[in-house]
Length: 404
Image 1: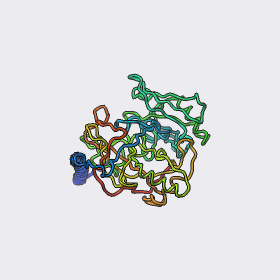
Image 2: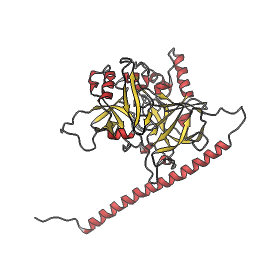
Image 3: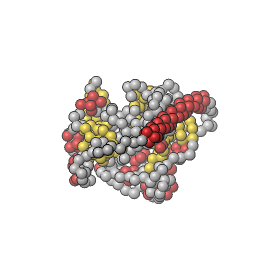
Image 4: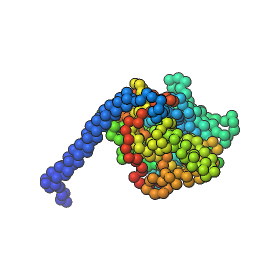
């Protein structure tokens, strides 16, 4: 039997095409790295000039400042208010390091393929009772023990569960899954039966089928990058210009909101005879007051928090589309129509009338301040001044948002 081999011209053509593709990809990456370096250098220059040239007179616009800092130790559970925070490669230290998942049904072909998710995340969208669960700030007791405690008003007062989330403990958990978070798949570690049993008591009040939930933790080696479409070059990390990590968040590691925007929404609610809503409905990480006007953050491109060596630069990536989770009371778990109903009247800025926006997704400046340990060289505190470094056109989702 004669074996047909490709002719030399075809082989040569294939090599040329492959080489051209590789060179083109490397050229684009190199261009991105150069642009990132230039952008970061320009931002540092802008920051120095703006801070040194701020007016001292009392008639000037009040300085925007950090008025709230929040982490959510477990995705979709209650927030924890902080007075200050640091950052690591997944965002605010301790933010959304754990989440709740359910096993996916076995595919029709009988087994899961390599790289295919075996579990999928569960949030207040499907189980609003999760809003009743408190997760404490992670407390490090020793070199191998960092604990958080879960409790809920829906279970007995003296019942709670403690989880060791220290990296060494997470690494030792024997059961691993590939979990689906929106369109991504990320490796996670199951933190044990006790945590799963506790959460099951809560979520089964919404749906008895949720009894199969598990509580999982992100691992230090886990990777889930932000969407390249919305990531500024200056936010890319390292010499190779890697995309920042998204961790277990819905898409971006940091969410920034402003008090003025919340006040505007609440004024509209009051005019309709409805109750004001707290900022917790929108689950931000950083809240800023004294901004020029409501939703001024739509046009922010880069901001600096703080003025000294610990200052942090954030890039505003895109607006945050809101879903029915924002209609869930973050104390009782009860769900209503607001704020989506009112936001639809003036914040429907996406591809259709159902895509309404409140707050802005953000990423850290990738200026080499990421330490080798994975800790970002910078800290923010309540009361820190916020400087708007650059402005530009708002960015909304390029496609219709499909919330689960």
